Length: 234
Image (cartoon, rainbow, N blue to C red; front, top):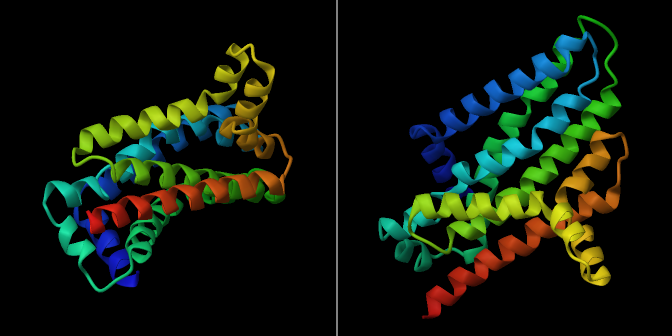
C-alpha cells in the first residue's frame, strides 16, 4: 500500500491536479471566510463551515476522477492487477493519497481559526468538531467518487458521474420530502449526508454520524476492491 500511496501522491503534485484542487479550495474557502466571518466581525466559523458542503460536491470528483479511470485509459490497469500486491492495498493506497490531499486542503480552516485569535476568543471545541465533521464527510465522498472512477476509463465521465452521485447525496433530504411513502422517505432521511453534517455545524457532535461517514467509506472502498477482483478473474 505504501508504494501505491507514494506513487499517487507524486502523481498529484507532478500534475496540475493538486495545485488546482488546493488553489480553488483555498480561494473559495477564503471567500466564505471573509464574507461569512470577517464581514460580520465575529470569531464564529460556523457560517464558513456550513457553506463548504456544496463546494465539495464539485471539487472532490475532479480530484478523484483519474485515480482508476486513468489506469484503464493508459492500459496500466493490468499491471496493477497482476502485481504482487493485494487489491485492497491498491485501492487503499489511492484512497489515502486522495484523503491526504483533501486533508491538506481543509487544514486552511485551522489557519482561519488562528487568524481569528488575533481578534478575539475562538471556540476551538466548535472549530475542531466542525473540522472532524468536514474530514469524515470528505472521507465518505472520496470513497464514493473513487468507486465511480473504477467504472469508466474516461476521466470526464468519471467526474460527471461522481458529481451526480454526490449531488444526489446532497439532495437526499429534498428527495425524501418529495416521496409520499413514509417508510421510504424515512429510510432516505437516515441516509442524508447534509443533515448529519449540519448537526456538527450547529454544535452537536454526534458519534453515530461519524460512524455513518466511516461506514460509507468502508462500503465503497470494499466495492472498489470487488470491481477489481472481478476484473482480475475475468
